[in-house]
Amino acid sequence: MTSTAATTVKTGTSKAAAVESATTVKTAAAKSAAEWTGARTDEAVSLIGDARGRIDALDDRIIGLVQERMAVSAVIQEARITSGGRRVNLAREMEVLGHYSDALGKPGTALAMTLLELCRGRV
Image 1 (cartoon, helix red, strand yellow):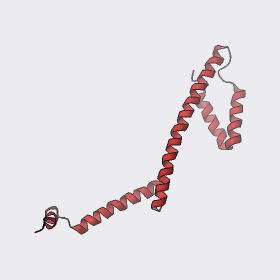
Image 2: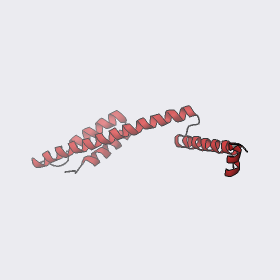
Image 3: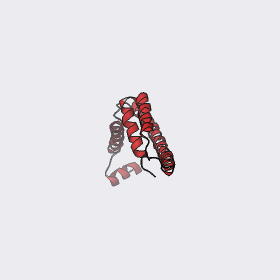
Image 4: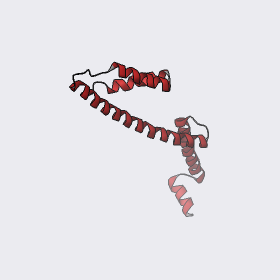
């Protein structure tokens, strides 16, 4: 008995079963990649995977910028309160809302409201 035949007998598998198993694994991986991306071609899966990596990096930068904005806002609020003023300057908040709305439309207003909410009262 050859080494391969002996291995086949010992493990109870054949080359055909091994190939079928490998094909099943590849198909499962391709299916999960397609499910993960919603794409139907390898090229689209790759493109989407790369683009999602870029989006994740952009999101990390956006989060960092929001945290920086919160810190700067806290400095401004502290200075305003220390000088006897109010914590929030509604006229300035309206300017921010207008800026975001002009640049991004109605969703920009919602985004600005969220940013303003994150940045209020951190002193």
